[in-house]
Length: 527
View 1: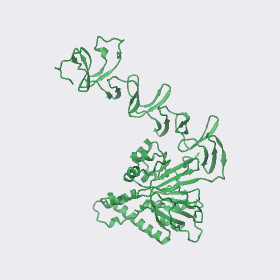
View 2: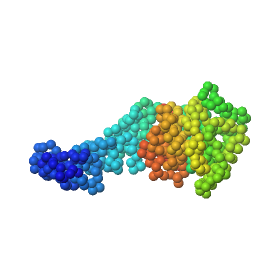
View 3: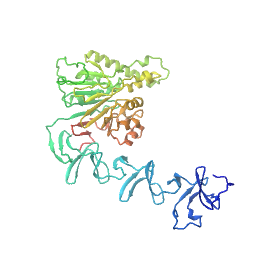
View 4: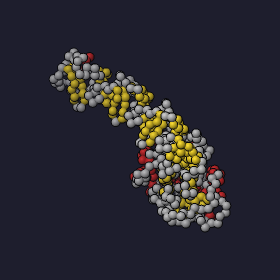
């Protein structure tokens, strides 16, 4: 506020002092707060003058407010001159204010188009979750309905603007199928056991039940554990983790239902797959075959099904990251871990030692999962984890060393024509940050993310999810562990990720991919 003794040489008008703007009346600062219009105090101003109806707000020090101001519970925006703005406001984000200048939130109809503004007044664009429904707004914030294009793909929303997925729709005298990402299927799509055909416009052309040229992924429902089965078009079969000891029967029952081949895969072409002989010398014993088993890290909720797997099936090779070893943490001097933490470490070490002993006795080759190496003969599955032992760098006590084994996890990137999936195991923020900084994706995309560490809030940072930018996230956890309020869930939905829970379906979540399309199926998504 200027010194009252200062000589001011204007009878009416604005004066800026110390970067603040004041209104002058008869050579003195107008000592007023609240709403202000110049025409109320200046007898010389007329309706013909510019700014006759301009409205201002004077703050407690009598200076004019610039920018956003909350007044009686409502937000208003004043431009650089302090003039109240109505209509569209552009200030880092896009806002809309009504005829009185009040900031709008929620659904708004503006000039015939529908918009949505969040609790902070930010205008929604692109894919947005509102009251448990996904909507799509174009670059200008207008709600989309029916068929529309975004980034060279055609999408569909119903007459309320809700994005539909996994469903047939009739529009413009044609039949379409809307996939899990909300886009229209074109080409071949494997759906509910049948290959469906669509032309380049997405028009349905018919089906072929005999066409089985597709890739299959099943994320099993194994509670708070991880287990994914992959059948590649070559016939090779892969397991990424095996669940825990209490869910091994789920794994065995599933594999028995898959009509597994009885012979190990033998590649007829050269490949950059790791040059290690599989367990192919074993005489056929009538058991089904799993060609490759990846154990991402040694915690029991990932390796707990190995012993029963080896008893019931033939395994070609087992791949583990370089830093896979688990210590007997309970034998160390430990004054920091709680009794429950010590019990967890004791149980996991017992499962680990029993598992490693069973692998040794089985004769199945135990192979190091080298970063950037491939698992299969067609180079569809690649390891993308770091060559780093996180506990040795960061742990300060036994339980921390035990938990940091999560960051040592082997990560697998699946790249098959239209489908790219990242199996992120149990990595937490430290490994996520490294994944970003070393540009592990090397410009490649991710359609489906096996969400790291069961959706726990120690993983799935904004930076990581923003970098990976998945369309679908699959969380492997028990029903009682589902949280729709924790930080990870909020990050995923804010970033536009459709979430599937393995526990929502007794059979888990399936992903099918042809060369043209990928799609997610569960009991709740089939149509």
